[in-house]
Amino acid sequence: MPITNNNRLSKTLTQAEIDSLRAAFTTIETILPWLVGLTNTEKIAIPKMNDSNKTFTEDAQTGLTINADIFPVYLKAEEMAKDVTLFSQLDEFAQRSKKLAEKITDTQTLAGSEAYITALAIYRLAESAAIAGIPGADTLYNQLKQRFVGQGNTGTTPTPTEPAN
Image 1 (cartoon, rainbow, N blue to C red):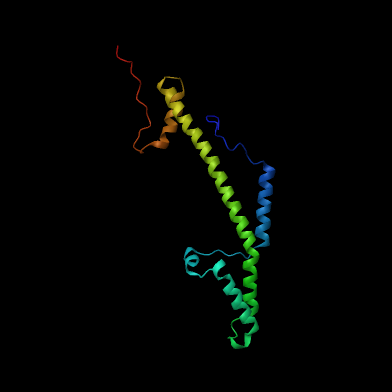
Image 2 (tube, rainbow, N blue to C red; image 1 turned 90 degrees about the vertical axis):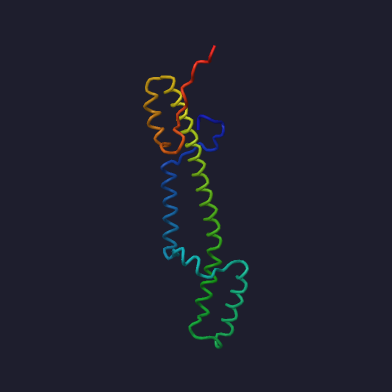
Protein backbone atom coordinates (compact mmCIF):
# COMPACT_ATOMS: atom_id res chain seq x y z
CA MET A 1 0.00 0.00 0.00
CA PRO A 2 2.02 2.98 -1.23
CA ILE A 3 -0.07 5.78 0.29
CA THR A 4 0.35 5.17 4.00
CA ASN A 5 3.03 3.82 6.29
CA ASN A 6 0.56 1.32 7.75
CA ASN A 7 1.31 -1.51 5.33
CA ARG A 8 1.08 -4.62 7.50
CA LEU A 9 1.10 -7.01 4.54
CA SER A 10 3.43 -7.19 1.58
CA LYS A 11 3.07 -10.75 0.33
CA THR A 12 1.63 -12.84 -2.46
CA LEU A 13 1.57 -16.61 -2.68
CA THR A 14 3.89 -18.28 -5.15
CA GLN A 15 2.39 -20.86 -7.48
CA ALA A 16 4.35 -23.53 -5.58
CA GLU A 17 2.76 -22.37 -2.30
CA ILE A 18 -0.72 -22.40 -3.87
CA ASP A 19 -0.11 -25.89 -5.24
CA SER A 20 1.16 -27.11 -1.84
CA LEU A 21 -1.87 -25.65 -0.04
CA ARG A 22 -4.25 -27.26 -2.50
CA ALA A 23 -2.47 -30.60 -2.04
CA ALA A 24 -2.66 -30.26 1.75
CA PHE A 25 -6.41 -29.58 1.65
CA THR A 26 -6.87 -32.47 -0.78
CA THR A 27 -4.96 -34.73 1.60
CA ILE A 28 -7.21 -33.73 4.50
CA GLU A 29 -10.34 -34.24 2.40
CA THR A 30 -9.02 -37.65 1.27
CA ILE A 31 -8.31 -38.76 4.84
CA LEU A 32 -11.72 -37.56 6.06
CA PRO A 33 -14.19 -38.24 3.21
CA TRP A 34 -16.88 -39.18 5.75
CA LEU A 35 -17.09 -35.72 7.33
CA VAL A 36 -20.69 -34.52 7.36
CA GLY A 37 -22.35 -31.17 6.92
CA LEU A 38 -25.29 -30.13 9.03
CA THR A 39 -28.05 -27.77 8.02
CA ASN A 40 -28.55 -24.66 10.14
CA THR A 41 -31.73 -26.23 11.48
CA GLU A 42 -29.84 -29.38 12.50
CA LYS A 43 -27.08 -27.32 14.14
CA ILE A 44 -29.67 -25.58 16.26
CA ALA A 45 -31.78 -28.65 17.03
CA ILE A 46 -29.24 -31.29 18.02
CA PRO A 47 -27.91 -31.54 21.57
CA LYS A 48 -24.18 -30.79 21.68
CA MET A 49 -21.38 -32.21 23.78
CA ASN A 50 -19.28 -29.56 25.45
CA ASP A 51 -16.96 -29.34 28.44
CA SER A 52 -19.83 -29.21 30.91
CA ASN A 53 -21.49 -32.40 29.70
CA LYS A 54 -18.49 -34.40 28.41
CA THR A 55 -17.91 -36.07 31.79
CA PHE A 56 -21.62 -36.94 31.98
CA THR A 57 -21.42 -38.54 28.54
CA GLU A 58 -18.29 -40.50 29.45
CA ASP A 59 -19.90 -41.69 32.69
CA ALA A 60 -23.00 -42.80 30.76
CA GLN A 61 -20.77 -44.63 28.27
CA THR A 62 -19.00 -46.47 31.10
CA GLY A 63 -22.38 -47.30 32.65
CA LEU A 64 -23.64 -48.71 29.35
CA THR A 65 -20.50 -50.79 28.88
CA ILE A 66 -20.53 -52.24 32.39
CA ASN A 67 -24.30 -52.70 32.58
CA ALA A 68 -25.23 -53.57 28.99
CA ASP A 69 -27.69 -56.22 30.18
CA ILE A 70 -30.02 -53.64 31.78
CA PHE A 71 -30.36 -51.49 28.64
CA PRO A 72 -32.25 -52.07 25.40
CA VAL A 73 -30.25 -53.86 22.70
CA TYR A 74 -30.44 -50.86 20.38
CA LEU A 75 -28.05 -48.99 22.70
CA LYS A 76 -24.69 -50.23 21.46
CA ALA A 77 -21.75 -49.62 23.80
CA GLU A 78 -19.24 -50.04 20.98
CA GLU A 79 -20.99 -47.42 18.80
CA MET A 80 -21.17 -44.97 21.67
CA ALA A 81 -17.47 -45.61 22.37
CA LYS A 82 -16.66 -44.81 18.73
CA ASP A 83 -18.61 -41.53 18.96
CA VAL A 84 -16.92 -40.48 22.21
CA THR A 85 -13.49 -41.41 20.85
CA LEU A 86 -14.04 -39.61 17.54
CA PHE A 87 -15.28 -36.52 19.37
CA SER A 88 -12.06 -36.44 21.39
CA GLN A 89 -9.83 -37.23 18.40
CA LEU A 90 -11.33 -34.45 16.28
CA ASP A 91 -11.13 -31.85 19.05
CA GLU A 92 -7.48 -30.97 18.35
CA PHE A 93 -8.09 -30.69 14.62
CA ALA A 94 -11.28 -28.70 15.04
CA GLN A 95 -9.44 -26.18 17.21
CA ARG A 96 -6.43 -26.00 14.89
CA SER A 97 -8.60 -25.61 11.79
CA LYS A 98 -10.71 -22.88 13.46
CA LYS A 99 -7.54 -21.01 14.40
CA LEU A 100 -6.12 -21.40 10.90
CA ALA A 101 -9.41 -20.41 9.25
CA GLU A 102 -9.59 -17.30 11.44
CA LYS A 103 -6.03 -16.32 10.54
CA ILE A 104 -6.69 -16.87 6.83
CA THR A 105 -9.88 -14.79 7.00
CA ASP A 106 -8.20 -12.05 9.06
CA THR A 107 -5.26 -11.89 6.63
CA GLN A 108 -7.64 -11.75 3.67
CA THR A 109 -9.60 -8.97 5.39
CA LEU A 110 -6.44 -6.97 6.06
CA ALA A 111 -5.15 -7.41 2.48
CA GLY A 112 -8.51 -6.28 1.13
CA SER A 113 -8.60 -3.32 3.50
CA GLU A 114 -5.14 -2.15 2.52
CA ALA A 115 -6.01 -2.45 -1.18
CA TYR A 116 -9.33 -0.62 -0.70
CA ILE A 117 -7.71 2.21 1.29
CA THR A 118 -5.22 2.66 -1.55
CA ALA A 119 -8.09 2.56 -4.07
CA LEU A 120 -9.87 5.34 -2.14
CA ALA A 121 -6.69 7.44 -2.20
CA ILE A 122 -6.37 6.88 -5.95
CA TYR A 123 -10.00 7.91 -6.37
CA ARG A 124 -9.50 11.15 -4.44
CA LEU A 125 -6.24 11.93 -6.27
CA ALA A 126 -7.89 11.21 -9.65
CA GLU A 127 -10.72 13.54 -8.62
CA SER A 128 -8.26 16.28 -7.74
CA ALA A 129 -6.36 15.75 -10.98
CA ALA A 130 -9.61 15.90 -12.98
CA ILE A 131 -10.63 19.13 -11.25
CA ALA A 132 -7.18 20.55 -12.00
CA GLY A 133 -7.63 19.66 -15.67
CA ILE A 134 -4.88 17.05 -15.91
CA PRO A 135 -5.37 15.30 -19.28
CA GLY A 136 -6.79 11.78 -18.92
CA ALA A 137 -7.61 12.14 -15.23
CA ASP A 138 -11.31 12.72 -15.87
CA THR A 139 -11.64 9.33 -17.58
CA LEU A 140 -10.23 7.50 -14.56
CA TYR A 141 -12.22 9.63 -12.12
CA ASN A 142 -15.50 9.03 -14.00
CA GLN A 143 -14.81 5.30 -14.01
CA LEU A 144 -14.01 5.16 -10.29
CA LYS A 145 -16.87 7.38 -9.15
CA GLN A 146 -19.37 4.81 -10.43
CA ARG A 147 -18.70 2.90 -7.20
CA PHE A 148 -20.38 5.68 -5.21
CA VAL A 149 -23.36 6.46 -7.47
CA GLY A 150 -26.56 6.70 -5.45
CA GLN A 151 -24.91 6.87 -2.05
CA GLY A 152 -26.04 10.39 -1.22
CA ASN A 153 -22.68 12.09 -1.56
CA THR A 154 -21.92 12.66 -5.22
CA GLY A 155 -18.22 12.22 -4.55
CA THR A 156 -17.38 15.47 -6.23
CA THR A 157 -15.49 18.25 -4.62
CA PRO A 158 -16.67 21.76 -5.47
CA THR A 159 -14.40 23.63 -7.82
CA PRO A 160 -12.27 26.01 -5.77
CA THR A 161 -13.03 29.70 -6.21
CA GLU A 162 -10.64 32.56 -6.12
CA PRO A 163 -10.56 34.32 -2.75
CA ALA A 164 -12.29 37.72 -2.70
CA ASN A 165 -9.89 40.68 -2.61
